Image (tube, rainbow, N blue to C red):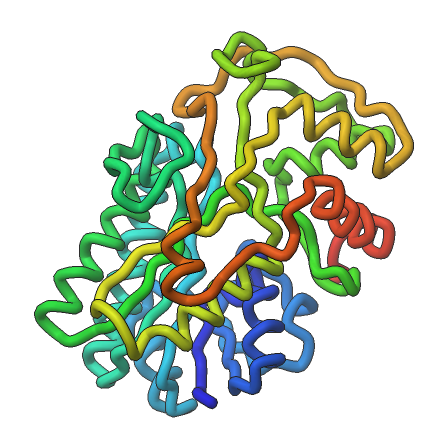
Length: 328
């Protein structure tokens, strides 16, 4: 098994990947600024507190822990914020990833798994979306990830850096044991916001009810965070074979509308979700739905959580155990 450095490993998806890596027998070190992550989310795993834009600090971590593989999660991730403040996304996401990649090249580490996003596709021409679909981001978040993906191809050619970028769709749910889950400030994801609204929080805003979908609201492909973590571990194991630079989608292949999510939350929680209508958000495609045939064919990945109610049930279990989120 390998020594893996996980940048952003104290965040929502990163912490689930850390748990999956440990279960697979890997030695794990987390590099995280804790600006959005939580120390409690990674338990007794060693933490290096730092900013990935500091290439010298990343190099020092690679040397000290004799790292052979890196998973890169550290990034800003709010689509709406990226539209309002694109400079932050180019600074944190692009500059941060390039600093990590430069550190890898300098220290002779040639294996990287990148946390990417379906936002690289922009407004889809066809659905489900496969990896050959055109990439045409409509927000700075998606653009920042696409820039990194393209840089990885050049780094692979020039420096021998082997990489797999995972373009996942809407991450959701929590580890079924209820010990780690989603805790953002502010919370922007639909499922935890719907749960909060059901429990007496502010009414859930529905951004647009006039899309060309079955009920007028946006449709998204909700993929469980545990399945995403499994995809990262499989990608790590698959770095030695195939092309040096690859991309894969992670998704269930079944979109659900905002209204469907709300009804499912109401069934799981047993309470009504108060809502209010709001205008469409800019840079919000009507439908995003994945084809994950390629990663199943190449790496054997298939989602375990394919039923939306099961996904939401794990999110509800986490919330019941941690109504205020992590303690730190």
